[in-house]
Image (cartoon, rainbow, N blue to C red; front, side):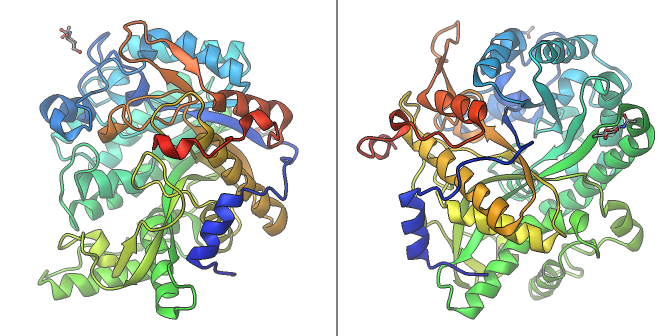
Length: 504
Ligand SMILES: *[C@@H]1O[C@H](CO)[C@@H](O)[C@H](O)[C@H]1NC(C)=O
Ligand SMILES: *[C@@H]1O[C@H](CO)[C@@H](O)[C@H](O)[C@H]1NC(C)=O
């Protein structure tokens, strides 16, 4: 592998030269959203409270602009406008998620909410009318509060609860949905929401809750996959995958063997934590993770490691439970050295990695964590090919945040350079990327960032009760890309004077 220096990463990502421009035959394009970020209607038609409703209502100071998802883009009432936008973009598929607490208000399958079923059927029918394939996520972070009150993903019974919820969704919608995603971004769920306060329920059980969560989440994913396989696949003939997110780590000094090894360890801790159990021949958590956590736990005075390997039954049960590797990717960070990161709590996942990280790489976005490094994406994709037996891959999220300008050259440049990186690895390295999903259709409730870091192709004016949606320049860029299956070369998509930087 040719490691680039931090300097050359910067150089490459600013030239944006596209060696290849044309996508292969059969490559598909879509755009994504998530229920809590767009639906609103948080307390109508039988929907119950989820963990994000609870967090935003009880601790509004934790949201950058004090907003919440009560109304959001009001997609519960305005889904036909969503479909109009999708039709304008011309996408092959629409990735959206189902709200667990809208479908099962108690959290359990004892009561199925007819209005929840009606809503998603109406959306699915409207998509079918426009020949837009649904790609549907069962769980995109909005856990029913009733299940959180029982411990949420730290409760081992979640394996049963998630299987029951999956069963209802496969049964009710499986005639219309042929492509499923079980869980979106398990790292964010376990580390950010249980091991930290970055996502709801913000438990901050660092180094403990995050690992309880991964044990249960991976088992729940596997049981949902097996359920589909055994009960539904014979008649519904669809596919099921998981969407794993990653910050990609590069050594800040690629000549430094220790940093190179630490970057590999960090990538195993981040991506491998959830990918290794599912996509490798041996299965189970990455060995380096088990070793590091055991070593740290002993040094910290714990009687047992805070993360232990699955037993043989679960290693086998979890292995191979994804028809595709779904990848959500946005950014690359650097590893600067061994040691305890100054921001690491004790105990914690970050301390367990044994490395110090840095954001001093790539271009800016409106999100501090989102460092623009297209070559990092190419390296992640090559690494996935070699680490996981050349899996068929869908990019299930990729996108850019700015401050909401309609002339969003920064977003266009990001898409252009990241899609160009995908073309490079498809043609030069034979990585099997089959489809691409842009995040996101329209500006929406960006979790703890509220509405301050928009990622959409459409601007949504949340100060106007009608929530008017206006296409940005990037909407036209993506529309042209999808229509021609080729990176647009139009001058009108080129930032005349690097204007977007002034707006960040
Ligand atoms: C629903 O929530 C809104 C705030 O978003 C509140 O004004 C309204 O009274 C609530 N409705 C019910 C039925 O509780
Ligand atoms: C199932 O779908 C695959 C493509 O995904 C197709 O090749 C196959 O013929 C289908 N089988 C049935 C029984 O519909």
